[in-house]
Image (cartoon, rainbow, N blue to C red; front, side):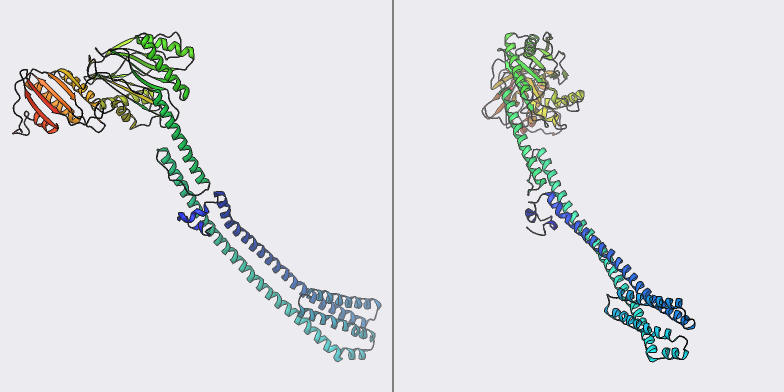
Length: 640
């Protein structure tokens, strides 16, 4: 292992060996730095305290040595005094005092010798003093015996032995005391230097320890923060559905990152399974009904991997009628999904038994209550594609939104009790009419309850999206509406949307050729036909086709009809294998030869020139009934 791994957090390759250690282990290893500093501090604190104790000890020792020396001097003085008194008054009591003083001198000499036993030079001096003191005993005794003989006393006191012994005693005692004082000063200085060294070393250790600890914690903390930041970035990527870069190593953070990625993978697999199951339970293919544009879309919630109970369905009841259902089973999961499939099928079965929307709900409701399947909101309608009449019933479901050919947007009326609540519930049969160019938008509440349950705000957002898409013929209008809604808010629940657009009524079979009769002078009728034309064409174009150019071509040709003829015309769309051709037949005067207008800003003469610029090919023909303008539209048709 690289011993410097901790100091190189920016070198990922060098960090690899260290990642075999858990963060806890690394933290324990890092704690060795402050712990080592603490141990050193304690050691130097103990040494400093010990040094202070030694200073006090040697100070007291020197005081005791000097005190013992002074005690010898004092005892000798006492003996001299007692000897002088005995010479003058030789009494037994004074002799006893002399003997006691001499014994004290001997005792103090022994004590001094014991105190300086640690120093050979001082011990030698103390021993010499003790030897001299031993010699003083006989001299004092001789003087005491010569009491009453002054001449003999003076001879003893003035003898060389006494004089030399006294001088030697004073000199030895002086040397001992002077040396002891010098030793005391020397010891104090040495101990003071040691104390200062200990204090300086202690401060240095503290400073270095604090710096090392701070640096180690900064590096370790920075490295942990860096890995946590990368973990957060990975979590953000996973939430956004992006792939995350695995964190290297095997510490707790890397383990957590691996768990995040594993959990996300399982969730994605669950979401994929749920989406597949949802698609399997929804209609695999919506019917191709002549004159009717049918688009649908289903969107799962961003925060819920469980399958939902939302559904949409369009099915054929007869040559002239289709059934339209949409609903939502409360809750999520397999139970909701199975209930949804059962209810959807039950509506189809009941609709074939009775083509009365209210009676269908009553039959289905009793079946749900008897089976205790749950609670369901639903809409069911039966649309007559010959005349546009639609009967419907609502069971606690948000009312569908209608878009009239004039562009007016509104909501269907009606309400009813949720399915599965009361077995004897009755439902109202309601009716409406959808003309050519009109549309019906059905949806579940997951599409409108996007503002924390603010239904009115969600409806307003949905209406804005429908209004925008009504004038933009997308490949899948339902999906385009749904995408507009969720471009500003995040879905909190599953949602389904179904778009039913009437391109033409009374058409009995699907055909690659479709015609509309129109009075171009009637604005509402012209708008209706234009919308029906674009919806029908949009079913056959791919997602990259921009129908705005087609709308402009059709608008210019109908505008010419309205300005230059009685307004009556036939609009025909012919879809060939690779081409879409628009024919407009009118009963007006012959159209002049196509040429570039002299005045670019003139009010007339620009329409056909603009059409010719936008269309892939433009042809103008004349027959006995009138004009026929044919334009190959700039669109790409998808494969059949």
